[in-house]
Image (cartoon, rainbow, N blue to C red; front, side, top):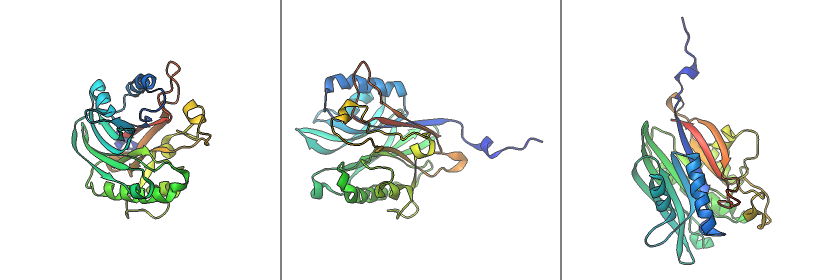
Amino acid sequence: MTVRSKEDDLIGTRLRILTWNIWWRFGPWQERRPAITATLKKHDADVIALQEVWGDETTNLARELADEMGYHHVFAPSMEISGLGLGNALLSRWPIKQHDSTSLYGKKETGEGRVAIFAEIEGPHGSIPAFCTHLNWKFEHSHIRQRQVSDLARFVDSKRPWNFPPIVCGDFNADPASDEIRMLKGLTTCPVEGLSFHDAWSVAGGTGPGVTWDNANPYVAVELEPDRRIDYIFVGWPQDRGTGHIVDCKVVGNKPLDDVWPSDHHGVLAELRY
């Protein structure tokens, strides 16, 4: 008699998630634009979360990228810079059934408008609840980011029920040991009781530091800041047959293409059971 192991029952198919801060229109924008597109196409993620996406009254970069790649998208601006919007976007290989956005704490206090966006994606194996956000950037704004994480967690919780664990992506501008990240991982008081997440890099990223703000990148080096891991893919706890279990994670967009760095941030790519 053959005894089935627990591993035999785990889902074998994968969902690829990519998050990336693409640096608005800063730096050598015209040269960076094709490098961003090439990087996204190379990694061929099913769901893409983007931060610092520019937009105006007629279009936004998320729409342009989605059209080029044959994807669906949602975009929500959070603030304005020099007459152009800056916000977050979700791109999906599959149709988006519904979407929503919410403002996060801190605009009145700091002048930085921040939002979180949500998309329910109609994938081939069931709906996927995906979220994207970008928190305040200053080192001394941990107290602001903690309030923003609380708003984010309540927003995620408001989208229940789900059969696939929620995926929360973004530039959190916070180190893994910070209180705001620990809140999401359930290592200190959770903003919403019973809602906590696995950090994809911690689960499946290997032994390296996984830095995404990296002085090897000349756009970063001029800021005179230390290397940091501040970009994340968080996933709720795995469900039946390992649904949502993180099986791989790596840093991407961390090399120049034809001598052009696509962004000041590196991206993060994760694979989940789906």
